[in-house]
Image (tube, one colour):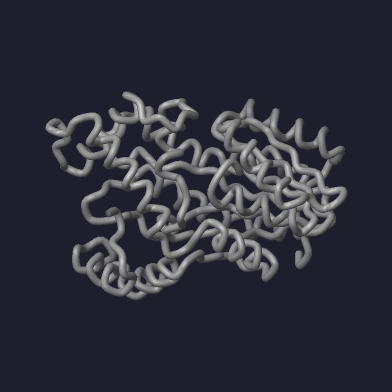
Length: 323
């Protein structure tokens, strides 16, 4: 699919980050978009960005509140999108929604672990299952699932457990690749890509805390502080001597650095993804760090989780995972 003009796309997790930038670029190219997110405010901001840039004549952009880990939300999103776009088909499905969390099977509680896994993996499955009939009746279609470098390297550093997110992203990668044969036999007009970003400058750290504590406020409250303390404990650090204000300051600083220090911006990531779709690439590696760690893991998989491996990566990439 070389051109997106006149096509209909569905984008999950569109209230911020890569999802927002995908929507902005798609509508700018004349693509109709149905977007969803758990944040009403985030969706409104994405809509405002697109309208400020000027929606091309005739392009329809619709916003839908939906939690992709809940099938009732997903089915409602599908039905709303079909009704508001007056269509029985879509051409592009971007399963982009995701959060971080649930790093440790031991230190983190089961609810956080499963919430993370159910959004990052369950959301991809449920949305694909729901919208597949609309992809099947299109003349050509493309399914784009966002995994991560953690879909082939289950780590963000030697002192940071990362089990729920990594397990989910491995599942997304395997699911996407398994669909190649399935679609070849049963729906040959549907293409598949799996997106594997490295460190992208988004608000995923802040947004994940909001989702895990059912909050859409920018204020860092007691629930977010408790989650942060649990994360520090999972890393073997004692946060009992830290005040709530120190925790807040630490969270804000890490969130700031996650954006400013990223080798790839969300806007750059969206461009790479859409170029990959046009080129019909199966694996779309996003960012120089993704390219580097992919090569390193392939070259030395037996030692990919040793301190020496992290040291080599830090030296070559110029940053250290999990910091």
